[in-house]
Image (cartoon, rainbow, N blue to C red; front, side):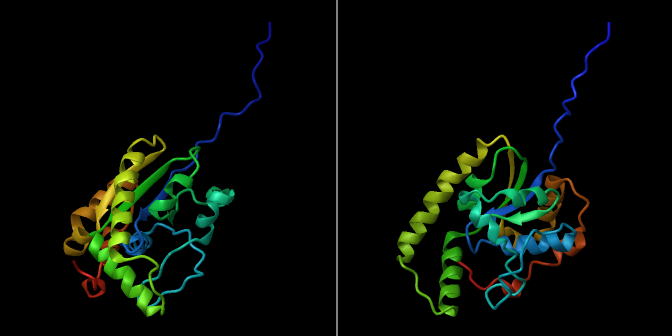
Amino acid sequence: MLKLFSSKKSPVKKQPIAVVSGLPRSGTSMMMKMLQAGGLEPLTDSIRSADDDNPNGYFEFERVKQMSAGDRKWLDEAGGKVVKVISYLLEQLPTDRMYKVIFMEREIREVLASQKKMLVNRGEESKISDAEMEAQFREHIKLVKPWLARQPHMEVLYVGYNSMMSDPNPLCNRIVEFLGMPLDLEKMRAVPNAKLYRNRA
């Protein structure tokens, strides 16, 4: 008697997507630059060019902001690359893929100072007070961390911006080990620049 074999193919295992996340102005662009220097290809559209606030570039990908509207097709080309997704949009990432999230942490008051300076440089003003914004940021971080811990499709490595600026060596080693990729450590370590650390608590 002939055995019947199913013609259905086994699902292809999707390559994990590296994600750099965190609050705005928390060092996400610096981390993207480090990973690019180390040899990891960034997924970016280069629409937002470098300026005085981010001399090394922003590394943004505008379609990330369209995930809530259903635009997720771009994830098909993100495997094995790194993309920046601010922490407020992490929940929009579909659960049918695996992500390695490098979450940047920075002193909240430095984040606020950096953001305020950027708005001044653009001739804009914040619609809420510093105190309100600080409270919102702290509440968001308080909620997003336990949420991340509950996501089986996400692995997370928390990286302190302040620690990275003072001693990048141990953190770079941890990042390479976390991603499991043969990145160039020497080039990664060369990216953090004390001259660009301009908003200190």
